[in-house]
Length: 189
Ligand SMILES: Cc1cc2nc3c(=O)[nH]c(=O)nc-3n(C[C@H](O)[C@H](O)[C@H](O)COP(=O)(O)O)c2cc1C
Image 1 (cartoon, rainbow, N blue to C red):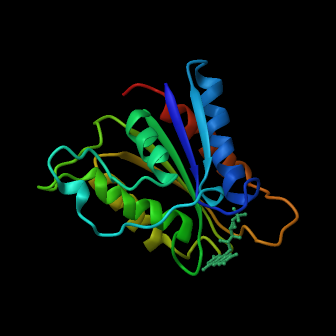
Image 2 (cartoon, protein in one colour):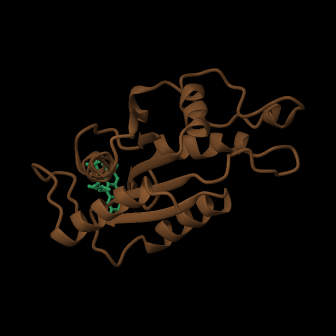
Image 3 (tube, rainbow, N blue to C red):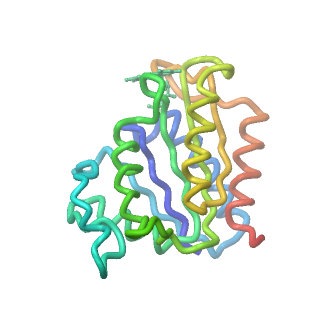
């Protein structure tokens, strides 16, 4: 099965990516059938939605903009599961990820119909510097957005992850949660 990892952090190997990798590695251990593709949004050149509404024209299947995000959007539709990662930046998802979320507008047809094939699972991995009591609203908002798009969504949220720490350190409970989510991601309902 195709699993797409979308890293919204500009850092390819730090807190967010490390948390995402725990999930992906667990999925791979669960089944040898996993074909994982990793995408660092920060390495790509793309814009946000231009509100051109070309995605609502007859025959359109998705966003029509042909920058490097077009391939990622295609793979999102073709894959069975996504692992999306973001650091909290100024109280929100990263700008890199927000542009992609806006481009998902093309996954809605002219009458609001959902163009995302049913049955996809998503793990959203959020990391933040602040303590665990912060940004639960961000988590809830992101979960609601993805769920409303018909995606079965689970969230893993790592707190106290300092941007200047020499290396990410996850507690045992968080590691176990990541492993469980990796298994869940690739297990048939
Ligand atoms: C530009 C910027 C803004 C940030 N804003 C927040 C914030 O609003 N709240 C928070 O808890 N952490 C904030 N952080 C800390 C990061 O979310 C946190 O360290 C995260 O784990 C970094 O992920 P990374 O290692 O994948 O880059 C910010 C870091 C940066 C660089």
